[in-house]
Amino acid sequence: MTDNDLLAQYYATRDAEWLGHLLERYTMLLFGVCMKYLKDEHEARDAVQQVFLKVLTDAGRFKIEFFKSWVYMVAKNHCLMKLRSGNGHRVQDIDNHPHAADEDRREELLANERTFHLLEGALQELTPEQRQCVTLFYLEKKSYQQIAEHTGYSGMQVKSYIQNGKRNLRILLERKLKENPQ
Image (cartoon, rainbow, N blue to C red):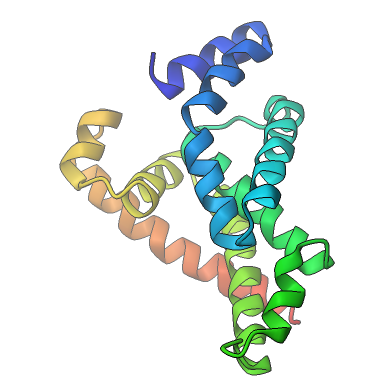
């Protein structure tokens, strides 16, 4: 079954077993993401379990279109919050590491994470067609032809949705950054 089939079964029955199949499919991806950010196997394993719990409690509140991308962002955000809160050992290790990034670099990374967070919100404000095509193109690395085959849109429609979606994302993101300067 595809991810979308499993999600459809979950939404139809609200049986967590379907989410379990999806999570099982992406366990190694989640572990890799958590290792990338936390740099500790034990913490990464704990984080994966916490992400599983978060997915099981939050999935019913959202209409998830692309599970792999969504669960990746859940894991990444969980790890970043853990590091920011100081509960991750890596925060202390970074400060004591001889090759640690300087303060400017850390601020730049935090600013980028803030921008990515705002981008996630802006992505939700696009039309469903634009959001789907932009997500498939930029996050899933699909070609115009693959997107057309997947969605049933013509090649010209796909191109238009991507171009307009990209432009609208830029406008929405600029507006959100002005509204929430930090």
